[in-house]
Length: 217
Image (cartoon, rainbow, N blue to C red; front, side, top):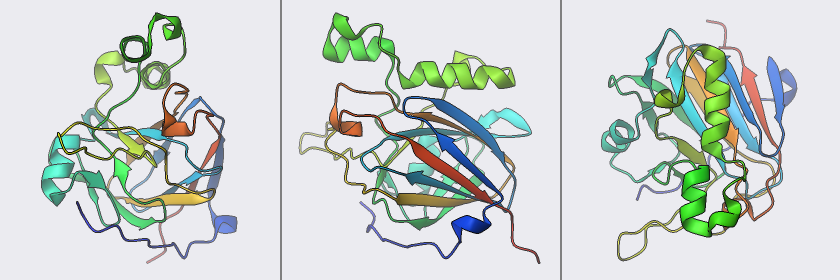
């Protein structure tokens, strides 16, 4: 596992070009232009933020877990990680991070997986996959376009037998991850509604997204 580096940002939230409040359990999306900086803030702590990235000019190019992990040789997204697309191109780079290691292997919860894991009584609870489908439909995409995602702030250690564990989140109120877009990207978020495991401390809470314009040359 890569060394976890806590690297705070020098950007001033008051000078962000755009600021968004993402309610608990809800989806969100925005265009982030090449050179712009996106910060995702865990407002209350211990809140998983499921996130997808697409090439804004061609949605068939999207974030690739396999290419990203192979490129950096680590099981987690950390400071300095280059987020790589299924075309092998860098989509964005992590440039500031106070939230520790971020999972990109456990995927997104769905009504079907919730039922298998927690029982039929949770079948009708909302889930991240449904959030993603709802949000990408605004751009003409369908559930076939939902790729494996990043789970920012989600604590997923690898157990000795190789299985993934979902345990209490370690992020604190106000922790954030910040990335610079290397191409025009569509960012799609499901502010995870999961209440059956500790990824959200069993109580989903709001998060914030801020976008700063690229610095002038």
